[in-house]
Image (cartoon, rainbow, N blue to C red; front, side, top):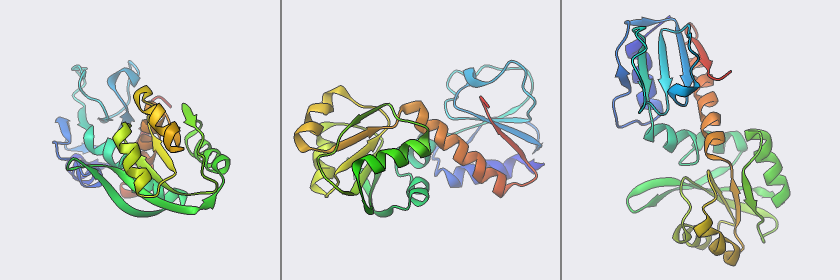
Length: 221
């Protein structure tokens, strides 16, 4: 069991969330917390005192009096393809800087031990369970990459000027493909939902450590 207020405060700090985390109040104490990307991922019958959602926009009143916690921008920024320092640490990358575009953090620039392009893709596939699309890098070995939650020609040119030869993002944007090919920049589109699922499971692992008496599950299992 954990205090809802404490869990909400932890989430707000961990995700650097600027919006209120508690979207619907519930009981003061919670025994079981379910994490999901959106309401459609929840089963009809749910044994939980509280829910965490990445996208809570279409949340309906289920009549169960459950607390609803949510984070959209903070979750995207810290646990998907934005400034995901947790991913960098797991992969053994050395973060050089936060990438800020038009006053907003959009990702990070990191160095890695020189490795082949194929080796990097295999490592990412192992971590994420696959990818959506790739554009092969013309640089071998690769030793600097950018992890960015947007894909526009000007961003590709910018990170190339910063020495990156690989661009990691969620979705491959057709309007930027030609620029990537002209630059010889390798691109790995991890997949929008795939990167979000990675973040959800990572958040669940951290919650279990922070609140060992709280039952934490990710839906769908």
